[in-house]
Length: 409
Ligand code: C5P
Image (tube, rainbow, N blue to C red; front, side, top):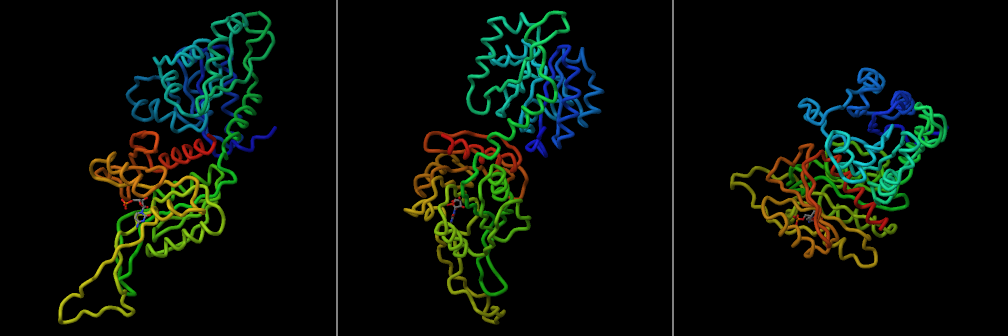
């Protein structure tokens, strides 16, 4: 039995009401044994079959139960739960849970989470054979299977056999070990959709020297760009991170090229474009708009005549030049727009002026620089989508996933 993909991944396990719920305990144990993390969500009827106490003990996390429990919703509500997970598993999946999800009904924590998630969902049905064979259930299953993209439902089981109700037929929940295999396969499939793709990411501020010891820079922390490099690498891309001076560790599996001034950043990016075809360019660096004309070769002395006059000249626009780089142009060029007002107008204007394909716009009147959170709107030539404030890591994962979807399409 292989569980090569589960290590370090997060599974949200939704436990419906049915005698098979006892098998969910074993499933929790197996996922953790394979190195995965599990959060359990127990429906009201599920709680008639297994206790929150056993689930909490086995999963190592508090059990989520109620949509309207103030402490639950503030600690981790349906939106956070769906974001937290890499995969959602419903086991046992009752006829009721399947019906709600197939029809977009949301009236408790399990159903709202299933509707809110953009992660893949694995269903392990368990019910009486006549219920399973009922055309209404089969129609709902077909509906779930027909959803494309992230929401697509994958099914494991039900198995044929003797049931708790004494009948014989299809309806028994798949064995935990079999569900575990299905989880691993689902996490593995599509977990590296950017394998074989090459990406260049710029991040951090630039440092424009005045003399050998002084310079002009800005407050960019580089966190968002580093998170994007990490997220692209996680999806299998070969990532080169061209970084200005920051205090961050190089993400796993990413090659970092360190630069200081904008002109160096541009040269480093061009080197990469010319070395091998680049599929994805994400220009998230806060490149200084100006640099000092005629950098002093020695430290400028404090002189009685007063401070020196700095003459500034414009820096090259790296994003614009990458977007217009002809035969070496990356297939997808993504820029950033940090704005304090009129985000949409400014971002759209930037999209056409710079010639990139997408712009990630953020409203920096909010707390963005140096912070761990970010609220952005993704502008493409077709439209836009606004993502509510979330961690920079989650913004990066989402952007990387959108990029993967773009290449899949
Ligand atoms: O024009 P503005 O600086 O607002 O544009 C922001 C976008 O352009 C970011 O993606 C940034 O990385 C990129 N940029 C660049 N080179 C510059 C200025 C901005 O690549 N000189």
